[in-house]
Length: 251
Length: 251
DNA sequence: CGCGGTATTGAGACGTATCAAAGGAAGTGG
DNA sequence: CCACTTCCTTTGATACGTCTCAATACCGCG
Image (cartoon, rainbow over all chains, first blue to last red; front, side, top):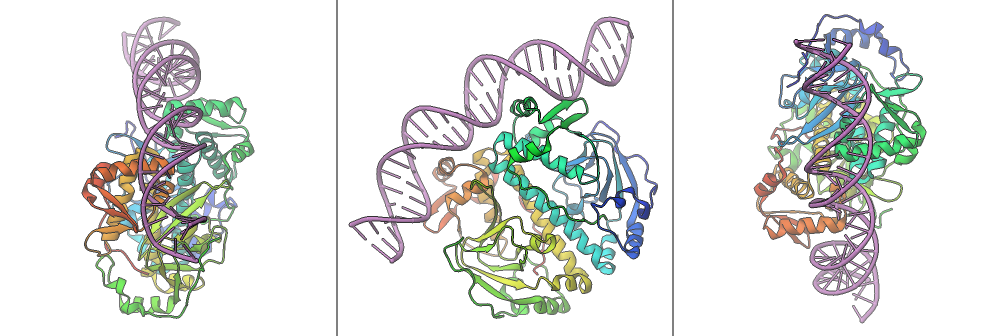
């Protein structure tokens, strides 16, 4: 149960063809017909506040969303309250596919910043598969990419040391954000308890680990979150091989 | 580099329509036309020995496989040799989708037992999407299910205690195997070092943890692997909510 | 017979969790 | 404007879980 109100507005505000995201070269260009269908696929937009719950575990009437702006994260919880953040959702990422495909959602999604979401009709997904093989392929591609990110997270939590894990997390978020075209120093909109719940560490130990990264000049904590000062050093420290830089679809 | 020879035989031995797997009620029934296409999609069969490397990280000419029989596992490694097992592949599971979709594979797959694999043409995947929306949907479904399993593994490694993790792993493998129709006591074909590399623990500590489960009568280690004696107790100890029992596609 | 793979056990070192407390910043209501 | 709360970061002390090192034992196999 979130304290913030969840939904705000639902009118279709931006045409897909003029979606600012689509201009970025992180995303592959779409055919006019694809664009047309995606536009008809789009039901509207949803604004959610920071800390609002976008999707909740156990629900099965979930919609499908694409993040237009803002950050969110997927997580699961154990009965006693222990929480594990599974991955983060950035602009262009698809949210809720598991719920649509498998019936019941087994994770929740919370907004890290105010988010603008593109809402898709659950029912029209079958139409997408029936009439737009390319887009269907793209949906699978996005699912597969999420799987790839999870693989790396699993490697991280399972086998990297606390410092390596932290460095990897911050580096990967930095890279993913930078790939969206941002310039200048990046401030990741996360708190230390998000880092802790992502890395599988306690908050106290997370703080001590981050403190060392900050003392080394790699990062800096500000009110808004974590400023990444030296992404290369983070990557080096994490032993991460980096992210393939490929044009990805935007649905 | 594996010591065993990798490939054996490649002739098409079993017609998809008469595939023994398809008879199990774990899998949803297929339309005749779907079956026909899947059959044409199938290029042949591949037998691999125990401990053979089925797919290797970094390769990009990968095929797509469905496990017909036997067990395997997906894993990633860090440069210094630390290994993390990401998930296990059982009959009916798809292997290599990431490689086909994303170009380069970022994980490896090794056989835990001798495996019989159904080999699919990488190039024909696009045809599948173009002409068989239902099957395309199924491929996405399988990718999404893998994501779901990874989510749970991530929760496990990140937030469960060693004993809970071990219990969860053994319970989930037991459930997945049982869902394929096996009867009687199950012997999971894994060694303790597999458990260790899956749970993100050292071999020594894994042994001590498993020893307690064995002393409590929940499991037993035999030459062939781990006999699950009390799956219910394992599930209870792990705090796991179980696996949704739904008819899944077999491609 | 020796050998490699596997399971087991003990001892000590190290990393991480837990408990406790403090301080800064932002927001709220008086 | 100030007291007050809440959220977040930080630090220290101690307990606990897990790792590493080391050694043993068992087994099937060449």
